[in-house]
Image 1 (spheres, rainbow, N blue to C red):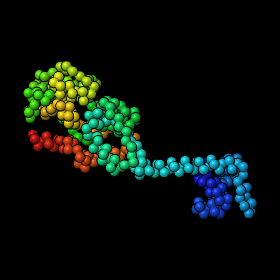
Image 2 (tube, one colour):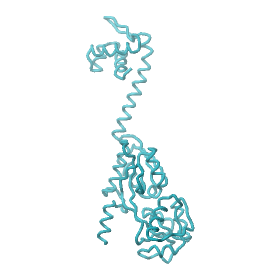
Image 3 (cartoon, one colour):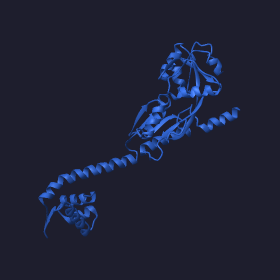
Image 4 (tube, rainbow, N blue to C red):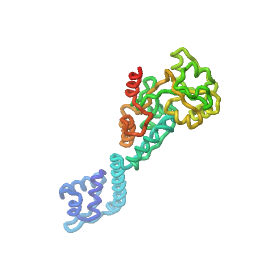
Length: 314
């Protein structure tokens, strides 16, 4: 059975008149008769008893009536739901974001998104950078926010801004008050960082290796919040992405600019070759609005802007 056939059956069954059904369906008498005949042939028997004076349902037609009612209701509901999803009146989008972004810069994005699309639900998975990549690859989420992949990773990357790592020191450290700090001075202190395979840890070690430097890690943790508290308690110093600076300050530590900092683009990840849902595309567009300066992200600048700044400073 097709939806067109079921609608034709329902219209005739409700009115018990082919003429009335034709008006409701905007069909000619011959077109409606052919539709009903095709339905009856596909089912194997008559659904209506027809005479020159009246139309009535056969027992099989009576049996089909409640089924047709449910089928049409389900179909109409499905059409309505999809229409609302395409027009962003309802829907759901899933997003994976590394905790440092999810806990600092993501809320303003979601606030702007919710203001414009109040009936779209958003599920956020705040997981480590590596899991963000994996969830996007496996299509467990439609979008991800993470550092730019260090190599081909079968995901599309749209940069949002360039993050510069900063030093984190205890509030009573002799280093507090400096405008910036060099690596050699910082690495004289007990060092705290994230555990492997954290991308922050990998980027840090690769940056130091390229400069023939190394770090002796005395404390490590899986969470940046824990690293911040360790530094605040005076156990040592650390280096974290600048997007975590406020979080570190709130933990009781202090952040200082690094000379020759680690730099890495942060952006939106998606699966190439797979079209985004309307809701996910709207969220992606909201991230893009941040690049254009339409969102309250005072710390966010796209890579091109940062490159221009470096050129001006040079």
